[in-house]
Each structure stands twice: as C-alpha cells, then as structure tokens.
Length: 389
Image 1 (cartoon, helix red, strand yellow):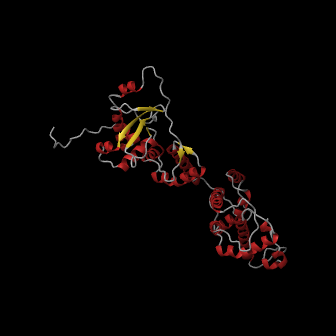
Image 2: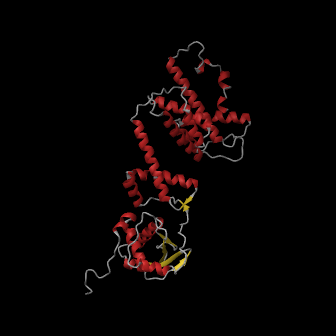
Image 3: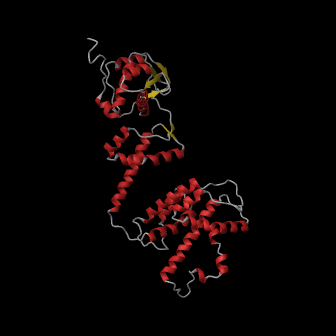
C-alpha cells in the first residue's frame, strides 16, 4: 500500500454494546488495552495479572487524545471496577500499570476477542485454582467528586430522573459523606441510591399536594405533632432547641398571612436547617468559664439569629444586660454563644407576643389582663430572669 494512503494505520475496533454500557471513550481504550495484553506476558500480583502500557505508545496509537484525556478515561474504567490501576497518574508517570478485573460488573458485556480463550489458557496453568475476585480498596469521597456521564444517563433511562435533579443532589451528597468520614469503593452506587430516594420523596410530596389538605390553625398554642417531635429527636436535635424555635416559627408564618400546607413538615425542615447551622457555627469550649466584662459573641451567632429573622440591632441591644446578669450571678458556662442565642430568641418572641396583644386589643386591657409592659411594676420587669433558665 502506498505511503500516501488515507488509511495508513490499523483501524480501531470496539463493541457497540460495550460502548453503550460503559461509554464510547471507555470502550475504545479498554479494547485497546486488551489487545495490548495479548502481546505481553504480564506479572501476577494479588491474584491479578498486570500489564504495562507506555505513555508514548498510547499517545502514538491514540493520537486524538492528550495525556489528560487518557488519564481521565483510565480513571473512569477504574472507578467502574473494570480495570485496576497500580501506577501514578499518567500526567506524572511514563507508563500505565494496569490489570483487567476478573470480576467485571454484571452489566458490562464480555469484550469480543479472537484470542480470549487462548489467553485464559495461558494465564492460568492447568489445574490451578481460580483466583479470588478482586475487591478495590475503599477510599473517602473526594471533595470535588462528580458522577460519571454513564451514571447520569442510567438515572434518566431507568428511573426517569432528570439530569438537573441528579446534579442538584450532588452538593448534599458530598457534604453528608465527607462529614461522616466513611470510606467506600462504590460511590457511584451510593449516589444512585441517594438520588433515587430523593426522587421518590419528591414524587410522594407532589402526589400528596393533590390531596385535600386538613386545615390547621396556627396560633400561639400550636405545637408540632408527636411524630414530628420524634423524628427531630431521633436526628439528635435537642428538645430545648426545638421548643425555643416554636415561637419564631409561628411568628414567621403569621406575619406571612397564612399557614403553609403541611405545618409539621415545614417545621421539621426549619429546625434541621437551623440545627445544622447552629452545630457547625457556634463554638463550644470544653471547659466552663465565667463571662468576661468585654465578652462579644462570634459573628456566626448573628448569622444564626438572622436565619430566625431576628434583627441584629435588637440582639446587640440585649448584650449589656446579658453580660451584667451573668457576671452578677457568677455562674460558668461551656458556651456563652449558645446562651446568648437562647437569650435573644426568648426576648424576641416575648416582644412580639406583647406587640400582638396590644394591637389585638387596641390598647384595651380586659379584666385580669397583664400582658402590657407598662402595667407591670418596674421591679417585676427587672427581676424577670426566666430567659436564663
């Protein structure tokens, strides 16, 4: 054949079925590596037969990919459990040391090859026991982990889950598993379970929205149901924290003019957001200390109060009274920040209860009513320390 032929090299061959299952790029590289294995003897280690692919060889035979693309596709094959890599990334290594997994996923079709039977006969001596299936080492979820394109297509085709919905769950997924610090060798499978569970929950909520909603009166006596309380307590949220959040929750929705559908669900969501912010932001000391005369709450305290729609100027105005009371009581606490949050929330709820009473009665006090501040003695007002309990 003349050197000027438009097809001077051997053509690349790949299985369409395999490409549909694991991806086109992965199928091309995998079958290219397998052809390379057929011309090498390999070295056995931990029950696997490892082969070497020079980086220059891969760049020469697959010139349409750069080093970064080769590294990305090889890592994708490793993440799917199809190959095992025992070398540094191609961007910093001159070779790719790899092995084909003996236990490929069930969804991956057998790679067609003319020499597969002969290769297997040469790989294992006659009468030798079959090596155990390889189990990849588990690792912590990387901070910038992302699902493969194949996984997103799988969620769309098998579960009718939109790609955008799946990607919207990624941030919570990474945060949850990195906080737990657990390791796994199948993060894609965990991500699939996480997304499908959230998708089913969303569909259930949408179905419930079409059902007639039971009218619920949101007044000062409203309380979350026993089931809602049990859910929050099981999640590790303190009962006092829940109780202190009820008045602000009532105030927020009363000011909006109408109670939401599913009050208990809304309250659980409200508490979970505040509890996550509270536990991650408020610093706690391991040793109880007295409050200093120049004590100031950390900036995160005002962020927590802002989540409860509490004005920052209102909170700052309460700070001198807070410091004086606790210095005079000579008590010690492990976290003055959390104590100040409780103090501000108490007075905020109390202030709005008083304002609501005055606006409701338009200045009229019925028999026995004692809700207005000016009807209380100065001594009663100054000695009211129920917020500190």
